[in-house]
Image (cartoon, rainbow, N blue to C red; front, top):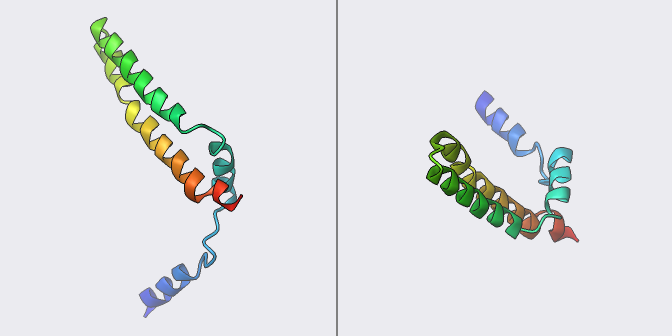
Length: 90
């Protein structure tokens, strides 16, 4: 009984599916960035990582080598915001 009541509350919590103020502010500023910025950041970090590896700085190379995936995910978020979020309403 209580679990169905909890589900009903959750289903009616945000019926208009509006973003909160923090997400709206992030979308507002993120939408201004060009999407290819994140692609170039990922490629640049791969090049820096390879350079560090050649210079035998293995720890630094591994550290910087972990950056491309987050950059690409941020680029994907940026593209989604532009397609479905902030700019869609304009």
